[in-house]
Image 1 (tube, each protein chain N blue to C red):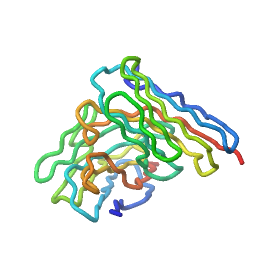
Image 2 (cartoon, rainbow over the protein chains, first blue to last red):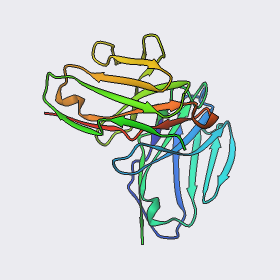
Image 3 (tube, rainbow over the protein chains, first blue to last red):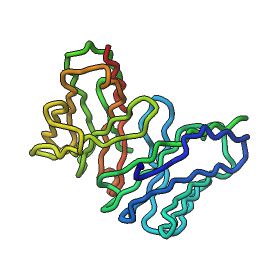
Length: 112
Length: 115
């Protein structure tokens, strides 16, 4: 069983819809949680970073962490075709800058 | 904003040969990492590049196959040695310490195809 599980998708939504992404994990030591966006043939780009449980909002993006359930989510409001990409969750036990364990990524397609 | 660059951006190589990939950052960073992303897969950490000392390798990766150098705080190289088709992947460097943050930022990647 992988330490971090993520539905590979693809997840197809109409423009303007809310995109809901999630990851589950098994290692209770994880405390730092990140979401990266990766466009085709590009490196991952950091979107959101949260520490421990709780919510964090940045523009159209909201990240949620529920450590008791070992479950994290990313919501994208008012989705745009430019949001079409693969979204990767990543986690670390010691610090966000240390060894990251990635989920497999969810491919998202926002249709105009 | 700070820039992370990798060279080459892509290459096609013959089996049995070696390729050295460079990662250059335009400001000093505290940590540098090398990841592999196999086709359709997520990222797997190969090693932590330590400045002035031997890299720290993850389970399943060895120095003879993936020698790494980090001579200073802005530059690192990863060599993929004695390549086979199974080494066809995207290789990414990441850094910590950009913009005074403690999160990882990734380079654009090097797409390697081994024939």
